Image (cartoon, rainbow, N blue to C red):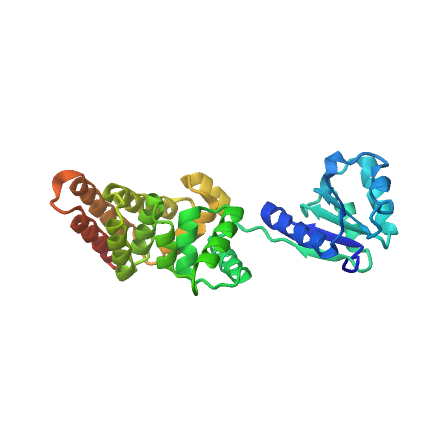
Length: 316
């Protein structure tokens, strides 16, 4: 068994990262006597029985989650324990980090030898890209920004699902993970593929947008879905661009009806766009919509023409 750290405090609200920090703290002690409970399940006087000598003789680990929710008497029990922690017990506390239960958090931080793990809240688009790249490194691989964006498009913003996807992709790739590998891996997610085309187009990356479009069509993605993604991306640009200034990310997300993590991306995509350009691009998509639904001989040609017109509208 590793040396007992008297107290480990995991501070933050990002559930997946908090869970990971707790698992890592518990595994470091290699103890068979582990008690893991929510703060609301701890009654008055129960802490003493949890920290009593282990039957296995290797020290015990007590995990109390959401310590800010401790009731009055159990909270006093924990504070008394923190004043003189046992050398044979590792106490792991999680705390949301706010004002609620701040006395417990302050007492835990003051314990000599205490380890404090700060878990940041991940809300911004750029932070999610950083998280994905860090997960690939954790699993022994590397990924560029294009791969991270493609994975976010395919999986969504749930950190637990993103981490699992990074693990799987790292295991299945022979080298660094790039955008093509991710999009090929998740080619069954047609909508994600369409949004990847849309993102490249509204960002002004003509070559990448056309490559993504041709690949999507070659793998059987419906032209209607791709055009719908183009229209959706442009409409969101327009809504964010005309929203009241000064709104925070969450407030703007509520205003325009988009997930908060996507607002940062759209704000970045808006750079270089003029309202007249967005209107021109939307007209191009409207014409393509009629064409892919039967007015054009080649839906692929109609979509490629729309992509080129979108990029040109941004440049203009």
